[in-house]
Structure formats: C-alpha cells, structure tokens
Image (tube, rainbow, N blue to C red; front, side, top):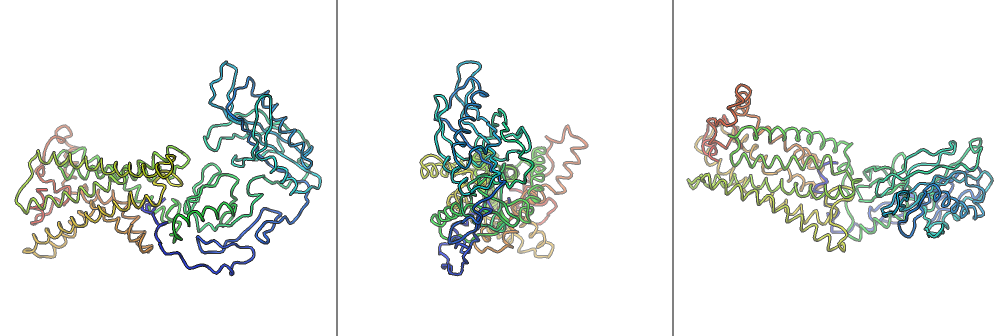
Length: 602
C-alpha cells in the first residue's frame, strides 16, 4: 500500500463523461464495459462456450466426472442437541435421501463431511450443544455417461430448498465460500474449516466414504460454485490490485470483495461472474461519472511504488522514535517549538505505523473499522500540528518585529491552546464523517473499513480530509512565505554566498514542519503525472527522516549525547548555554548571522 491511497478521491476526479465507445467494435465473444470504456473478453466454465451473450455447453454428456458441493444447512434459529454425532448422522441421511431422490444423482454420493458451527444458544444441561448451522461437504461421483447440465440443474434446484429433521426445519443452500475439496482417495477428510464471516472453527464429526474403488478411474473434477452457472468476464491483472484473505480477495481499484468460489485466477488476470462485475461497475458509474483510473500500483505493497512507500516509511519510523527519544532525554530541547516538533513527530509516528501495519487488515472486521477511525484521526492531527508549527514560526517573527516576547506563563497558555486545537479539530471532523455516514446508511455504517482500513467513501475523503488538508496547507504556505520574507529582509544588508547558503538550509529545515510534501499529492490527483506521485510518496513517507536530520542531527545535540554518556546523572536537568535558544528546534546551532540572532528567541 502506498501513501497515494490516503488522498485518493479520484472517483470524483472527472465530471465530464467520456465519449461513448463504439460498441460495434466489440467482437462476438466480448461485452462493452461502459465504466472503463473497453471491450471485455467473456468466457464460460470448462465444457461451455460463449455464444449470443450466454454460455452454451459444448459437450452435453460426460463420464467419470466428480462434483464437489458444499451444502449449508441453516435452521430457523439456534437450537440445542444432546449428541452432535447422532444429529449429524440424522441430518446427513436426510440430505443423502434428498440427493438420492434426484434421478441423475441416485447412487452417486461417494463422500460426506458434516461439520457444525457452534451456536450462541444457552443450553440447559451439561451434555447439550448449541448449533447455528451445519455444513455438509458432499462428493458426488458419476462413472456412467450422464448429462452435466441435468446434474447441475438438479443441484441448483436443491438451493434454498427445505428439509425437516425431527422437529426442526432447515434451509439448504449451496455455499461456495468454504475452501477445500473432498479427498476422494482418503477415508477421512482431515482439513480444518472456518466460518467465512466469523472465522470460527467448525466442529468436525466424521467423513463417511460410501462408494469405493473410485481411484482406479481418471476423474474430471468439477467444483459446484456460482462460476459454473454464470457467464464470466476476464479482468487483466494490470487493472486491479488484490488483497488476499483466506481464499477471498478484494479488488482494491474498484472496491469489490469477492468470496471464495465467485472468481477464478488465471495467469494474467482473473475471471468472475459477469453479472456481478457489471452490476458493481454500473453502481459506481451511477454514483459518479466515469472514473479515470490511476495506476493500480498505488494500492499494493509489493510493487515499485509500494516499496517506495515501505522503505522510506520504515526509515521514517526509526527516525521518529530517535527524535522523540532525544526530546524526551534533554529538557533544554523541550521549548515551545521543541514540544511542537515532538508532538508532530508522535502523530506522524502513529499514523505511519497504523498505515503500514493496519491499513490492509481487512480480515479484522470491526478491528479494520477501528483502524480506519484512528488512522483518519491521527492523520488529521499530524496535519494540524504542521499548522501549529507554522503558526508558531509566524507568531515568533511577528513578536520579534514588534519587539515583544511572551512570558513563560503565556507560553504555557499557548501550549495548552495548541494541544486543545490539535485534539478537538480532528475529533470534530471524524465525528462529522461518522454522523453523515450513519444518517445516509440508515445507521448501519460509520464510514470506515472496506478494502482499505480507512475512510470508505471517496466523497467523504474529499470533505473530511482533502479539503481540511488543503485549507491548512494553504495557511502553512502563507506563514512560511511571511517568515522567509522576514529572514530575507534581516539579511539584506549582509549579502554573501555563505549567507545565502545558510538561508537555503534554514528554509529547507523550516519547510519540514509545514507539510509541504502534500502539495505533490494534490498535483498528482490533478494532473496524473507520475513524477508528482513519486515525489509525494517519497517525501511524505520519509517525513520523519527529514525532521530527524533537520532538528536532531546537529553538533549541539551530539554534544548533549556525549555529555550524557560521560555524566548521565546530571545532564538531564542541566541547561546548556542554549537553554533559551529554542531555535535549535528550527535552525542549526552554528549559524551566527542575523537570522540566528533573531530566531534564537523563538
């Protein structure tokens, strides 16, 4: 995952629909995709061909073919049973009788694997077990010549049918989300199965082999999933980036989650049910005009841009830890600007850790939502602290111009104000995002999570992150320009190349706390130039490195560490000659020009 995802609201990047594609140019085995303005290749299951907009079976009859089916048996409500083994046998025999009643499936069941999902029902009695549903993994083998279409049709008729076991009514559904296949050459199926929603382990009873001597024939295996019944669309791998989760995948570029059994991976892409894909992209097109999709490289970790985010971000995290440790060790550095830098470093550290280690944890469910809320809050908080640092620079230079300095009590009051501003502003924005999403979703969604553990709505990324960021960035630039002009005026009477070099170094250091790297993010969203993308990723991911180099890597701090090593007991509370020179939080200590003299009082 690269840092471009933080500012990715490109779904609204174009307000003018693209000109219609000449659909007549699509071949007979293609379908026009209005969302991407391309012709999509259409395919079908093995043994079928795509013709006249539908899949038609090429071979109507086959022999020596096995079918792999997952039947989910769901009761009307959770219930308790005295013996799971006994009930599992009764349920299996009921399903077996139902399957055996079909003409094409009679005497073809070769394997059963009944499993149970533990329920939440409070059962009275020590020997009772609560059940939410049962999963029966059935292996069907047909050695004789048979109609594949008839078998699939009869299996589909069982979907959403009812059976009665004892006093309980059950609904049978074919559920392809469970990963695994029946082992026809083994008497016992030993694989572990988990619920795709709750991730709880299903209780295993036994695997019953009914038909023997199957292994002596070559078997063509067919897993009964949605893909067997539907026409498929092929998506080239260059058009999407994938997050895997126990057999399920998330197509991050179009925010589409595919469960196991609804897709099939190919060498250069994947196939999925065409109706599902076109319904999803039609909704995206309806929500916003045609999107000009950016490079898919910005949502994956293991590509050029992902690595360009990961490497500097890792170095940045280390640098930020060293920066925070340094400010914590030396009291003389903890002036108002020093504290500003320290709080900025803390917030950037938290955001980068959350982004690198939490943004892709979709499988956590509610945990992913929590990560999204925290990541939104701390990114906003980090941006607010850049505004505080920039404003403090502006305020100090204004006070110098007016020949007034703040008292210690005033500085404490300012610090309290800064902290309140940094805490409340992000809190209000996050609360607005949650409230808007709750209202618009009938109180079912708070607006976080999805394929990325972040703000789920592209619209709300604009209103609750991009716009506040743009306003703060504009203010920071104004403050920075005023400070630079003040520095230039103070140097006007002492022009030399050395002074100019010092000034450039000072400007670079001051710009580290303004969040200037976000400018390239906006330029990338606006112009789509890759150079802006790379600059934004490198500078934003490596912000901690620049802060460390600018404010910690100095002769003064090095001397402090040297003194700490020699005399650790007295150094922490000893103020050096620079105690009243908080400019060391902004400028180099060896600068002896007028800029240093006026800014040392910041």
